[in-house]
Image (spheres, helix red, strand yellow):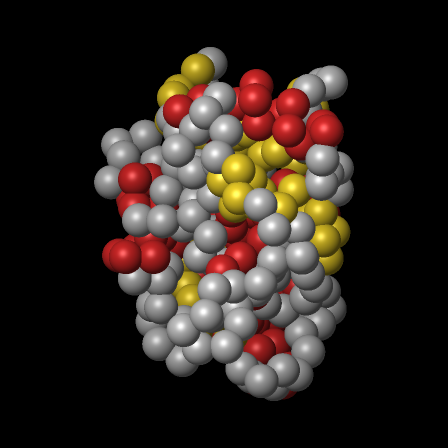
Length: 278
């Protein structure tokens, strides 16, 4: 296996167009997924393209009320950047350890496409758009159209995640919760993200998503739209009906970290807590 370190994005795209590579940024997921015996190097089945230090992929800018985040911005860089959305900051605070956050990238968290990825529920409800580039074209996809299953993405082998675009929004309530073996530095058993905008006691915006309770992050925009225009009091009076409707779309599985009954119960309780806090 070869390890190549291109110096520019253009060189990277040329290499991707000519060969079949595994793209590696921080490597905090890929190194574990491809680990071998203790004290031996990870075993990859493809040549590796190292992109961590490409300057064209490391930036965060605000243009036309849309935040542009380069795909190799590390979680630690985003944690302390003044432009990072507060909800994403809350999620990053309890993601991994400082050492891992200094290597892990936002693009890598998306590219790993794990339903337990802690940044993903946040990116879903912030309506993130993922910009993908190849030597031939640049295209944009809503994150829910990019990730189609555990580890599965609609990215071609000659494409790379260039940036993440997040429309700027104002909320009166935000919430990120993660349940795991430890508060940080552990894979989520379940994660929850919620945002809402309330004005004059009326719901003007309401979005929630759940991680690790399905093959992808669970979000239902139709159910969210159903509560727009309700008063906060109406939501609380009808809370059980709302919980039941969302519960129909939460279908977790049993695995080594937890069981489906526990996951579903916790997911509903987190949603209930968020609604009652409005």
